[in-house]
Image 1 (spheres, rainbow, N blue to C red):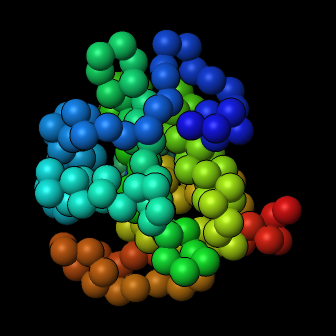
Image 2: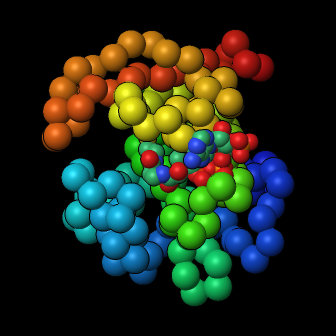
Length: 163
Ligand SMILES: CC(C)(COP(=O)(O)OP(=O)(O)OC[C@H]1O[C@@H](n2cnc3c(N)ncnc32)[C@H](O)[C@@H]1OP(=O)(O)O)[C@@H](O)C(=O)NCCC(=O)NCCS
């Protein structure tokens, strides 16, 4: 990971590093806890990892032998898409989500993306507060986007405007 992508405001004892295949079983459990109705399977994590580095970037937060969080983006043309972001319940509200997000956004800028898009459940107020606090704005909604029928809010952050 490049120095600028290692994130500002490092959190004690937490190492941010690229996702490795050995992390996948633990990520599957964490994902089920974070997204009970639309969690990713091991196969999905494997196929995402196979897209790194040309078409995707994934980072994990490791505290000793345990993982505390993860985030990933994929590139489509000049857009970066935030694919996932989660922090273990015991480690939430300590700045880790913000740090993971800043690492993937820095990596998207380094990669040459012109903007970052994401979908978030319209009632996920903690995540929406995080995204808007770093400059994401609303692009629209996608009714019925999630398997449970919930609406997605589509947010965008334009890197060219920000720089
Ligand atoms: C969203 C998530 C990643 C945030 O991670 P986190 O480590 O708790 O976030 P941080 O401590 O870095 O907080 C960053 C900002 O997010 C917002 N935020 C986080 N948790 C919040 C909460 N429970 N209520 C309101 N705002 C919250 C705040 O704006 C916060 O900034 P502040 O601490 O200066 O007020 C975490 O709640 C999570 O994993 N949720 C489950 C998975 C999920 O919903 N992921 C997003 C999918 S789109």
